[in-house]
Every structure is written in C-alpha cells, then in structure tokens.
Amino acid sequence: MPINKFHEHVKRWISRNYIRLTRYWMGLHRKDRKKIALGSGAIASMLLLSIFIHYHNMAYAVKVDGKIVGIVREKEDFSKLVETMQANLHRTYNKEIVLNQTIVYERTKAKKKELTDSNALKKAVKEMMHFQVRAYGIKANGQVIACLSTKGEAEKVLDEIKKIYTDNSNAVYGQVYFGEKVEIAEVVSEFYDLKTTEEALKLIQQGTDEIRVHEVQSGESFWTIAKKYGLRVEDLEKANPGINPEKLQLKQKINLVVPKPLLTVATVEKVRYEEKIPREIVMENTSALFQGEKKIKIEGKDGKREVIAEIVRHNGIEIERRILEEKMIVQPEKQVVLQGTKKKPLTVATGVLANPTRGKLTSRFGWRWGRKHEGIDIAARIGTPIYAADGGKVIFSGVRSGYGKLVIIDHGNGTQTYYGHNSKNLVAVGDKVYKGQKIAEVGNTGRSTGPHLHFEVRKNGQPVNPLKYVRY
Image: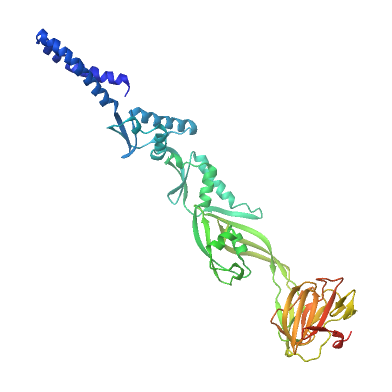
C-alpha cells in the first residue's frame, strides 16, 4: 500500500478522536498523565503497526461479467490497462472501440505474491474482455458470415467472389447472382472477428466441409473425379477406404468431402463450342473369321458439330445445360466391323507343326560363335504376325533374359514351342490356342541383332532341330 494512503487513514482516525482524547487528558492528575504518556507511546506504536498491516494487504478482486480475471492492489492497475489497450486499438485501426461488459472490483486481502502479475493480467484482458467495434457485416439469409471495417471493403469482397466464377473468356455471362439473400449491414462486432478482404474471401470460399455422393460414369477414374470437384486423389482415397481406385464400377457411389462455401455464386453463361459426334459402329458377320475374331472392314470417321448452349453453374460446378442451337460441320461416317462366325478349331495338338511366321531363315539350329543355338531364326519385319505352330496351352507369356518378349506353348506329349524377341505378345498364361492362331508379332526385343522370330522346339525339355518339323 502506498505510504501517502497510509498517512491519510491515520489522519482521519486522529481527526475523528481528537476532542475526546483532549478532554480525557485534561481531567487527569499530573502523575497519572506521566504514566499514561509512557504507556500510550507503546500503544500508539502497536496501533499504527496494526493499521499499516491491515491496509498494506488490502487488494481488489477484479470481476468481468461475474468471472474473476485477477487480483490487483489498486483499481487503477486494471482500469489503466484496459484503457491503454482500447487506445492502442483505436490508434491502429482508427475505429471506435466499444466495451459493453460489467467490471466489478471487490475488496479482499492479498499478499504480494498472490497478486496477478502484469503479463497474466494482459492475457486475461485479451481473453475475457470483448473489445467491440462498429463494422459492416456480410449477411447470408440474415446470418452474419464475415465482418469488415468499411462498407467498401465488404462490397469489394462480394465483387471478388463473383469474379472467381466468371473468368471463362469464351463465355458470355447473362446472369451472375448469389443463391442466398445477401446484404451488407452495419453491426457491432467483436474486434477480433474483424477480417481483411483477403481473410473474408478465404473464409467464404472454404466455408465448411460437406459430404456429397458422386455416381461413377463411363471412363471416369479417381483422378478425373478429383479434378472435376477440385480435390486431391488422396482426399478421395481417405473418404472411400473400402474402394479400390483401380476397379471402379459403373454407377458406383463415391463419397466426396468437399468444401461448402458460405455463399453460392450462380452463373448463367452462353458458350459456343465444337463437339465430336462418335461414328456409328455396324457389325457384319463373316465366315472368313473364327468366332470371337473381329476385323475392321470400313474405318469410318467421327463427325463434328458446333453447339451454342446455356450453362447454369453453382460455384463453378455445372448444374444444367440447355442446347440452344446446333450446326453440323462434318458428317459422321459409319464404321463396319467384321465379326467371325466360323467355328474355332480344336485347341488340342495335331502332332504336326506348321510354320510359325512368314520370313527368311537366317540362322540354323546348332553350334555357332562358340555356343549352341537352340532354335532357328526367321527374319521378318516388325509387326509380322506369329502363329501357334500347333494347338496347346500357353504356359509362359512375358519377358525372359536373352529372349526378350517370349511365348511358350505346351502341346502335350512332352512337346513345347518357344517364340522369342517379339514386339508384342497377344496371349496370356492359361490361354488355350489352336493351330494357326495369332499369338504375337515379330520384334527385336532381348539379345537380338535385328527384327526376327527365334523359334524353338523342345521334346521333354531338350531342344531339338525345328527344321525336322517345319520347312524354310
């Protein structure tokens, strides 16, 4: 407690009791006065000490709206702090700072160590005191969604939000409006809720998370779906833990966790674009091909048309498309595809091998360059068809060291044929093939000096001369 306040309390006590003490003193005998003088000195000292102790521990518990925020020695310790913060905010933002809270000071006793230090007091003021300002709120359907310092800033935010969804230079925008009832109104806002234009834009755009359901369409993948809704593929995977992205099914339901903006910008745009008209595919039966085989007879071609359409979007996502006008640019032409009707030959081995491809024999079976050549080489252009030498079952189709792309067919009775250096394999392990079926195309893969087919015949695992079974 400051010493000057202590002096004031002592002076008030003496003033109240001065006349009473004087009369009492004058009525005493001289001898008694001497005794009393000696004793009163000690009493006065004790009295002054007790008064000092009493007032030295005096303090105030500060309550804001009924909640204690701290203990101070003097009321001014708190009130000046609040006034300073108000003044700083006013100076920084040039706004009238409004404080509509009840502050109560309750007398209490507290030792020095029990007083709230200045840093804790500042923190309490920031957390408990609601510094309010007169601001301009953007309202959507009557609810304030963002507060800004000026009406101009609020108007700028609304204009910028509309611009985000009207940036298509190829479109003519007939209407741009908000889906909600939007207004700007003067409000009293918490100071810490005031936003800059950039902060308000971000707040309105991000909004809250909303779960939507998307139905998978033909040709869609997680990547195309994510791109359509402005998401990441990782977001889709997290929202759909039980779905394999590699095996999406038509009409399958996909969960989307997408940001739901606080405002809906509706646009009605008129666009002009060219659209492909897929060629019609006509199937034509032929006995020249085996069942399951197809061959294009007439390629045909896609058409093209010019379209003028009116598109309605909500926050950039298409809601409705109305075709206003169509103009044909290129007429589509039909594609004719032959499909075989001839019954497939049996896939069992005949025991007689046929030539696996057309071409020139360039290397025979046997020793060459210091090592044994376990088959024959038939030179041909890349892409030349390779046929199964006999019926059987594919036991290997892939890449093997030296051979490059390789197909192995097991014909039963211990006979196998190898087809190596292919550019493309057309069969898979487990396929049953018939004699003369196209199984691969000539290539130059693996250890090869030029395009050719390396053809082997093996009996019970041992290479034998293929020229005993085929003619070149």
